[in-house]
Image (tube, rainbow, N blue to C red):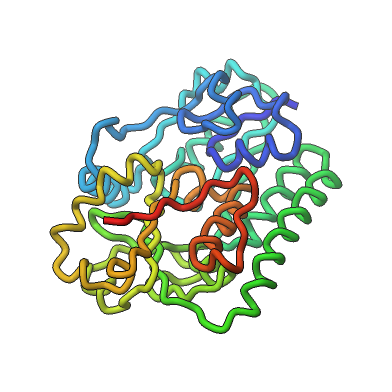
Length: 304
């Protein structure tokens, strides 16, 4: 089978199922596992590489109003790859090629490849994505085994959290300028990790916040998991917090419980490493209870 992935999380799912050798094309954002960087790219982005967070947000809002995605499909490159299976998504209207564009392109390709749409909004649905891809690729048993391994890791964290005596107030922020709450699976991760998320809602999209909402929640722990941003890129935006009245008075700041994580690789990428995200978060919230597994990066604590 010849597989084309149109989102990084799908690329990771395909590879986690042992189908990496059948992957023939990916997006410009696919970067894990490392070998996929050498595969043909079938998408491009309209976001300038040097855009600020505010400029990116403005561009996103404009495209949403126009109901247009920020990514475009290179149909010529896609046709040259002759895929049998195309994996895409409709969860986010701006961070992937529009589904209708994908299906329209698929109709013009030889053999009419199958288009598999993933649209997870919860952790369970993310895990089910492995099973969906596995069924489409004819390896259902292998996919079920991989899904069960992930479920076991989730259960281990949840079992440890169930014994906790206290749960801190937590805020995962998916953007800084302007601030956005976390959404979909991330509030669920907070609950499983032993915290209370007061700004995001499980299974619901992230939403734009006013800084007063953040201040009113008085989070004891803040995790910056900026969507699509690495740790290094997120750190560039932290000085913006100096202009937020009351930020320095928050419990999380006074107690040095502010963390930065790789939102691109983990928290905003609904693939197998979302379970790594849970383990990263659990360790940050309760390091004495939740050990950090080998090979999983710790959240970066901000101490100034």
